[in-house]
Length: 240
Image (cartoon, rainbow, N blue to C red; front, side):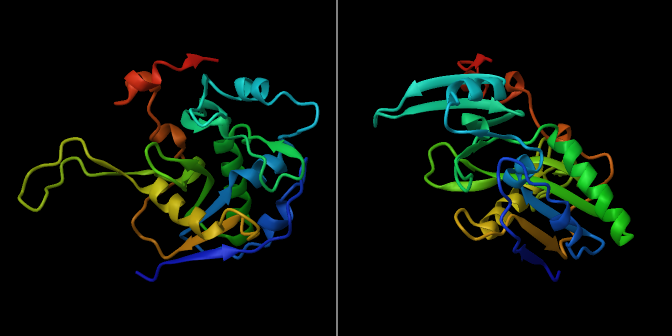
């Protein structure tokens, strides 16, 4: 497997609204690629930005999430834990870094936007197998530091189903599914960086451990809060 995560350096995408079709059209794509795009530039592309001045961030967070739990951290600062787009994340994913005085919100209907980008690239390059994945940084409970997560997708099946396969001792796997797409998104976000790198897109090339599907979406691997193993913790979050 000749696998590569290819960083794509771009111009600065400027809030409050800056369409990125010129960036998308300039990508050099091959059949079997997966294109990871940070949700930040997708949000800017849609104009999903609010000026910090005069904006009530807490009200903005409430409007952008489905569940909401504010509290005061013992260190003295306020935290808003939320579920947005069926993802557990602080502040509904709203970001102020590289935002030039704005709050940048997650894009609306992220799967649909990923599918639109995928169709455009497939038509331009005359290919069949292509994945487009929206990413963001998030924190993991009981761990310092941020890692990458999938916030929307099109064209690739996110899970590898191991049910029915045998382990090294011949025991049949009963429930195990591998979250392939988040593992790859984590690596892509690592390549993107978190500061002034100007790498909002990473192309994964040469990975054969994933299936391509034109009907794939986030619905293929998200779990409703009430069905999750961590539901006792999630149930304390009020519905917004």
